[in-house]
Length: 480
Image 1 (cartoon, rainbow, N blue to C red):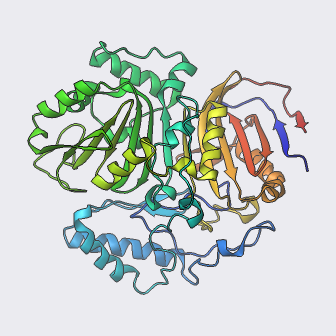
Image 2: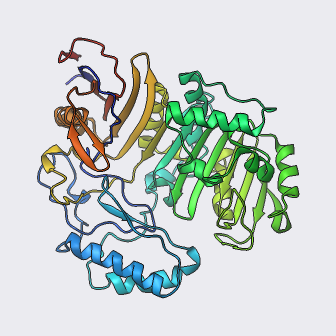
């Protein structure tokens, strides 16, 4: 088979927003401290070439109802003990319940977890695996030649740890979004209202809202409030990245930061300055407030509405925002090329390059892909699932033909990708003809245009989301 194969299917495009549901053999694994479902997934329908080890650790003989009941027992136990925990929310795309709890109640959580799940086979419910030995041996990669402003260069600032290696990495590219949609970015002298208007334009045009890494600076914080506390605000970000899980969530921003303004702001902030400690690592200034992972309800502010302790490192055109000292130090080491980064992981690196080539303005890259998936109320069918990839990218972009969503599945072997191409294309054709509103999936009268390709060991699909046909409806073109 040729190294590169493209299939393009074009119809008149619908304007409804598309929600992707379970188009791969597994979906993103839950973020700690969530618990994966323990209902086994059948391996029937997997193509040849997928290693048996992908499913050998799947818990056996536990129903979804038992798992769901255990989650509820866990939450009730925490609440009765007076420990803070959010209500579990079911994620239909992964078949998992997601929740979070106050790290101060870790001991209570462990006791409650044992009580709730002690009677079930909890194989596979442990911590993330370690970084593979092959990725931590040998010299640190040199990615200094990566283009300025590229996702590859940004990935090189993320430390390679078990926490980041297996967690979703979310990227928001403000510079690309502004260029793509002709949004005028506010300058350094613009007032808070102008910056707020800029954020409104990003939300309306690119769908960029205070979520993911942007929410780490306060979901409801106004730009002038962020600048008062930290000496910068949303206008200063060219790119923003979030990686890690739970309290160990690491945020890295790249853009134009004034170290002098930051120094003045953190020392003059009336809420947190009394707790401020200033240190230095590898020549990089780091500001710290409170104990690692602590919550101080006597110190709450717009950027830290629940009193989270924080660390802020300022390394030239990059900043690090974390809740624990080791995480900030590891990020500094990656930034100054003294430690391994996610760019040293081939599968993640290749997906970042795909994001760069496509000019994506937002996306998620992750190697946290579950080896099994539940079929709840018949919502999933094995025949529609391709083989589990080694890593995946889901992102948003815009080209001459309109807004699109890009999906890239990275496999360990090109033979697997080639074998999955037909099924992948069929799956995308199915997705292109559907929309999901409030969890209800309906068929579109006019399916969206899409194209698929297999390049090396990666399957790539683009679905256009706007109404702008390229060729007559229904025409199928194959490019070799």
